[in-house]
Length: 125
Length: 125
DNA sequence: ATAAAACTTAGAGTCCGCTCTAAGTCAAGG
DNA sequence: CCTTGACTTAGAGCGGACTCTAAGTTTTAT
Image 1 (cartoon, helix red, strand yellow):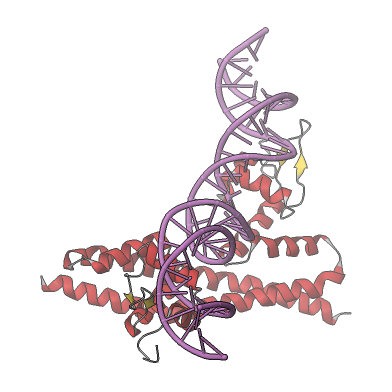
Image 2 (tube, helix red, strand yellow; image 1 turned 135 degrees about the horizontal axis):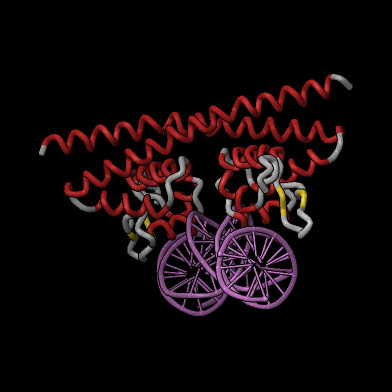
């Protein structure tokens, strides 16, 4: 447990910001490969697991559904014959990200307009 | 009903992309002011209502919770004494938008890396 | 040796944001 | 007149993504 490459669920939860519940849930639904276990059967997360979890978190926070992430994860565990599907998923996600960026950018000016308006009103009093 | 400034629920649903259910739900929870009614008690949406709904949709799609939107809407229905709160909500939302834009932007390169990788693998075969 | 903390599982519960149902009213066309 | 279809309400149901409980086992610390 002092091994820097071998973290318990709790330690992994702390490092990732996910709860222990969520880590086990992600494993159960196939987002995370069954991780290594201790003699007593407790989960041990490797540096590699941590990196994968970090990637998952970014997929999530940039708007990919858990369902699609599961499909992607499954493909990653299969062979080269899934490259096409994985490529398609990443391209689709890139499009989603670009679309979202546009949406955010274009709404920003409306928000700034409101901020200016309220700020002016405030100064008037 | 031929009045261009007076739309039924269905027409408003079509124009906004929200369902009739959602429009009534938004009114019920205070996101939309009680709209004008026909003699028979049916909802009639004005151009103004449509604009407000459009603004709500952008707040939603850029990540504001319905709860906060309700608070903002309530403030908008109250007086000048709520300018401070409205300003704070808009500033908070601007920060959320900017943060999200950064997050999306920084993850984009990771996605592009994956896309390149899969594309290369594909070409090799 | 033993108490406390952390682990295990399957499955139930929660929160959000709708989405729909049930039961009834109303307006227009044939 | 009567059917069709749109409307009304309160409240139930749903899908997604966790989040927690219950009941039991293991590890760690004293």
